[in-house]
Length: 471
Image 1 (cartoon, rainbow, N blue to C red):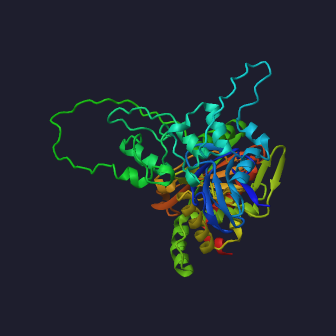
Image 2 (cartoon, rainbow, N blue to C red; image 1 turned 135 degrees about the vertical axis):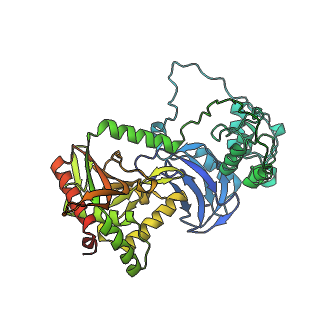
Image 3 (spheres, rainbow, N blue to C red; image 1 turned 45 degrees about the vertical axis):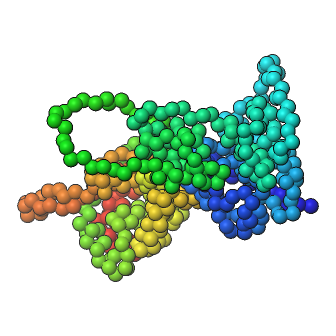
């Protein structure tokens, strides 16, 4: 008996209800081996490389790569051994049901129609001698689609489910000359996400472009071939002429929606209070130069601050907590999340047990996570958990700000820029020193003011006497 297995939209994390199939690394008919990358799947904030868990052949691809989101459990493809026949694969697809149908319902899948609702007209039966998969025939009958104009892309000219789905796409509407089309509005064309972004950037209408990718998919190269060369202009206008200032309406993408929802919930449900302090940073900056030379690393000021935060958290376990309902989870080690402004939005990868890492180890791990974030390759395990967060905007010149707590954590530290400030010496003279502003946002349900203040006092001491970071 043939070994046929489904490949479904996976579930990573308790809050995940849907994902986007960003790119297939294999195509229908390809054989793959265990450990080979099959596809890229995007969730709200991460892009995961899905690796094969066994050897098999891609017998059927049911969902093409694109910006559409699919609920957890959606059948994306069918894998089987070489002995499986097309009829067996068709029967498997027709009989497949998601293992957890409740997930689809939670994700907003339409509920079954009530009994009193009007009964829809029965689909028109299609009689044809052309080779066509059962699922493709069922979809064509349901939509009343004429198969005459469809060219099958399957083996031997067989019409696949994707062929019918592609034929049902509405024709692209004409675009006004000079108007750039938003990526979110340009989903009707059969194109890769990157091709859509490039087309939107240069105001190129994808309608009518003959794609050179698999199944006629429009690729990046197809769009770049249509980008006109830039022609610099030297003549300045004789006088100022007012032009239209019509706004470009950009809908929130999935990542921005998730960030907006979580921040709104955190600000509404968590009773924030704020503690502010500044610390002298001259000795920390001087020690950093020497320590980096000795350790042979390029640790940043933020790496030293994270190390100081981690040590202070271990000394004040009442701050190193998570809030879960009416219970506190207190941790023996500090898993410090660092806020990173990635191309996909705000993400918070976690430096595990930062209190146990040497400065050079912490700097290397921080660099690895930041690089993954900027490349959009953070996995769920890179961001899951965290007992405390650090958000640093000092490198952008921001002197002081208040950060919003990242639940279930109970506190977050906002770090401002290092500034030169005048101080009075013991002799009554005026001198300048470098100071850094710190603001601790605290969840008052879990941490009292005295506990937060004691943590900041320890942190300030470690910054002003940084030799303690190496003990």
